[in-house]
Image (cartoon, rainbow, N blue to C red):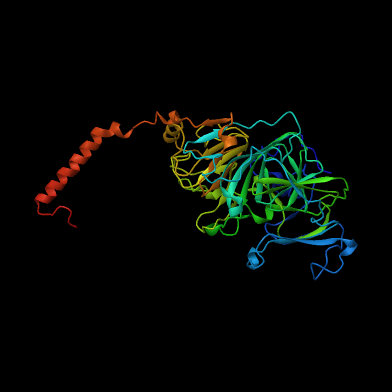
Amino acid sequence: MPAQLSDPTEYQNIFHWAETQKDGAIPSFAVRKNDPYEYQVGFGNHFESEAVPGTIPQGQNSPRCVRFGLYAEQMTASAFVAPKGSNKNAWLYRVRPAVAHEGFTDLPDNKDMESNFIPSNPKVHVSPTQLAWLPFDIPTEGGIDFVSGLKTIAGSGEPTLREGIATHVYTANTSMRQKAFVNSDGEFLIVPQQGSLDIQTEFGPLFVQPGEICVIQRGVRFRVELPDGPSRGYILEVYGSYFELPELGPLGANGLANSRDFLYPKAKYEINKDGWEIVYKLGGKFFKSTQEHSPFDVVAWHGNYIPYKYDLTKFVNVGSISVDHIDPSIFCVLTAKSRDPTAPLADFLIFSPRWDVASHTYRPPYYHRNVATELMGLIYGGYGGRSDSFQPGGVSFECGMVPHGVAYEEFKAASAQPPPEMQISKGAIAFMFESSRPFTVTDYAWNSKKKHEHNPKMWDNLVDNFSTHANEIEEMLSRAANGMKILNGRGYASGSAW
């Protein structure tokens, strides 16, 4: 049985997962002690799992008869002719196949969601202004589950074009009952911020707490229960791509998010012959089908197209041990490629507890403009790298090539004192959804009472220090000019090579 946490913030207070291993004084463990499930390990591996031993056919995938009268069903997520290394599929052996349903009917649009981020859509907005949102309220009335609590903030592209990105928040106060959800548009990367999620997938359960993430692939049916009560979090959705580990290049084999730390479910089936509702999202529209059997009746499966989760406290930070900041790509947990090999569609980055030992270096983020669109959130703790109020559950947004950086007071303090050796972001995890694509902002986010702007007045007192040295500079330039005159008087041609 899983243990209860005496302190709900126990895992928020550790500097890194390594602390839980007690320097080898106790048997090592891979999951948090209040996690009720067992998992398989290894990013992108080909797994197999049986709730009833001896179920998976050997030497073939679709025999004439599957043991126990089960049905074989394949889920193929890549083109049939995709290169071997890109092929993604899974075989499921289930009580009844997914085709056994009672047809589809339209559902009303979710007015708080958007999937078409093309600027010609009148329901999205373009702005260079740095925007932010205070934490979105979790509803206290009515039964709002994970699906009905989805709200879109910003994105790019459109799902039927098979390349794009959407960013959402969810705010839910009730578990999904006799109901499952299928996202036919893209992959969901889910980031709980308040409250754990007990997620039942066709491949088995995942228990995902704040400080952990999970990825549910396109087409996979799942149900979300709320064991801790009302819950809130963030979602990064990618169209036409899938999440993978970033290339490490000169880092070599280890560092950042290590493959062995990604956890995959084990088969767990349920036989439930009551009425079920399956909600589909397709092209940003919602549909439903009904059926008289559980969609989670998979007794065994094998494949590499499987939902997974990852504990962010296991991230292995790398950085400078001499001078200067390194580009934020060193904080990348997962990436999703675009059709441009030099620019990813989406990166998921985290800013978690780490040591900072660089010397002779300006410590805060330097003033910068970059091509990436940045949408940040805060899971827990405090984060000092933003230029405005930033709270757990809130959102901060900056479009590409918009300048940003800290206020003058922070710049002055950081410039006046040498940076100490210190632990930064203690007790905190912030994250960034980053993309090479420009975002448009949805009506929901644009008109939200939670929205506010980064006030540019915070930079009004950035002092012109250069002009205070005007006399000194004028004297230097004058001496340099006189020196050139003397040299030219000795027969050297102006501008000639010495």
